[in-house]
Amino acid sequence: MTDTVPFLDLGRLHAELRADLDAAWHEAVDHAGFIGGAAVERFEADWAAYCGTRHAVGLSDGTAALELALAVLGVGPGDEVIVPANTFIATVEAVVKVGAVPVFADVEPTTLLLAPAAASAVIGPRTRAIIAVHLYGQPCDMDALGALAGRHGLALVEDAAQAHGATWRGRRVGSLGSIGCFSFYPGKNLGAFGDAGAVTTDDAQLAAAIRSRANHGRPPAAAERCDVLDGNHRLDALQAAVLTIKLRHLDRWNAARAAVMQRYLQGLAGAGVAFTRIREEATSSHHLAVALVPDRDEVRRRLAAAGIATGIHYAIPCHRQPACAALVAAARHAPHVPVVDATAGRLLSLPLFPQLTEPEVQRVIDALAAILATIDPAIVEHAA
Ligand SMILES: Cc1ncc(COP(=O)(O)O)c(C=O)c1O
Image (cartoon, rainbow, N blue to C red; front, top):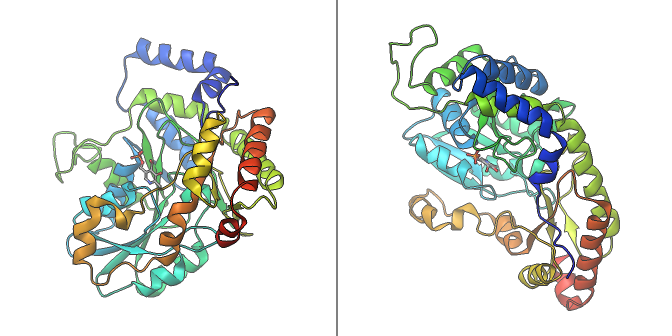
């Protein structure tokens, strides 16, 4: 029995950094400073510099980042926010948490990212914001979405939870809209040892408002006063220390991911599989290697039998989630998202992480090509 090719193996990544990570843990214990303080300030400064923004605020998780971004932009009850129907459900949750209504828009067929024309088509009198989700690691078309938001006076929030380090026309994500929102969930390209997140922005007032809301609504200079009832969404110092160490390696890891992706593209050319296309203006963080395959569930089952782990991002589009049924029923228009509906059943994410070895990559290519060669050509033709 051969070993499994894992979908993601964080153990290999942490082995590279073991000494630094152990030292960070000891330092945190020695100083007993677990909330706020120098470690958090340092990571915030490093992350802002990396993203090319004036400010970064460390937070408890990416969902909080999205929620706080919308809240400080003044999005609330009665407002609508445009979201792609193909995203992780947290994008939708954040809109609902601030009391606004998510309006689902379709994605582009080649990138599977929010389609500017589809976003434009669902703008109404109550639309206040667009969330550009840089899904799978690639930035959305920020020229078109920026122009659209500008024309209609809308806030443009980036959900960059999967796109650490990706660029649009040479600028890093997180610096392309009103506020950038990041998750540092352990499996992300930059991942903590638990939940963590951040926002980035050039706007000092927005950054201060998020910092305050994340800390029980207390302004930085007046710890006794509470200006707004929100809660606790702080980044803790141990996570910040881990993130500071890992950030030094992010570009190298992203390059290693890109190399794996290149191997998949070359090795599977002509095999009946289509990968999401990267635009000329963009670079991707290659968070996920998403393929469109025919007979997806059978292909996935046979890959598993061959010892290859895969994922699906996402099996149920947001507008079809049971939790969204009432929203959809009450919507101005039923969601019109034909590309999302047509592709959801064909999505398959292949193993992709920086330490994946060349023999493992070759095994994935050989196994997938062999499986696809046995699929009915009519199904392959239809799916291509
Ligand atoms: C696109 C997207 N948005 C938001 C989130 C939410 O981040 P978190 O899990 O840190 O709350 C995630 C992460 O899972 C994500 O992939």
